[in-house]
Image (cartoon, rainbow, N blue to C red; front, side, top):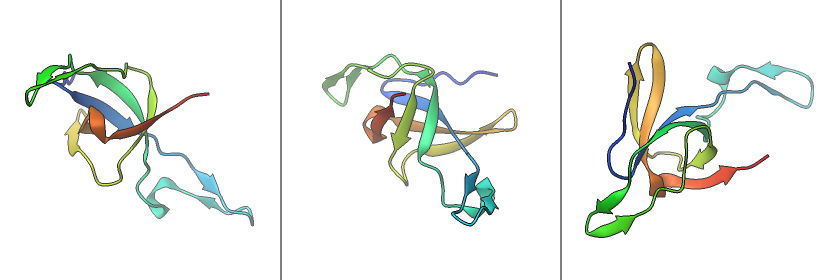
Length: 95
């Protein structure tokens, strides 16, 4: 099943990575705070939202940093996804 966002919404999947402490202990994803780095899976069309014209500048595949407590969590086909507004995305992570 595929999730298609509307208006200025973006579907993202949080990226969990293992961290290693300075002493070499590996911390699994469950032992850390909620990650803020995510991968964009799909993007809404933008358009007129709340009386303002919104241009979508994100695209599928982008890695982004989101606000810590933003969005709506959705579980779909065993995956935990989030639906956020484009203005809840703080930055695009570039390599």
